[in-house]
Length: 68
Image 1: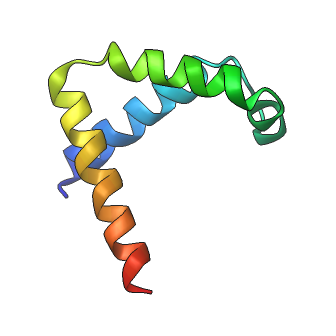
Image 2: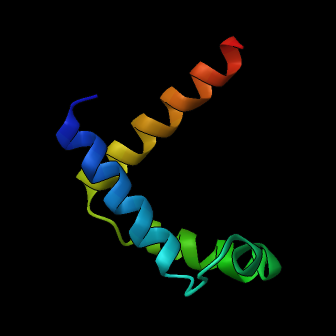
């Protein structure tokens, strides 16, 4: 992953998380269902390239996790 792709991944992840208006992890998990719905809606509105980067990065993280 290039530095530019990494930057785009984290910018997009930040956009998805801040769409919930939660400022802390406890706030994010307290209303997990409504926050998950908000995050999914935000993801669906992303441009195709941002979705591609998100999917590619998350899949890579899962592969790394499965190796351990």
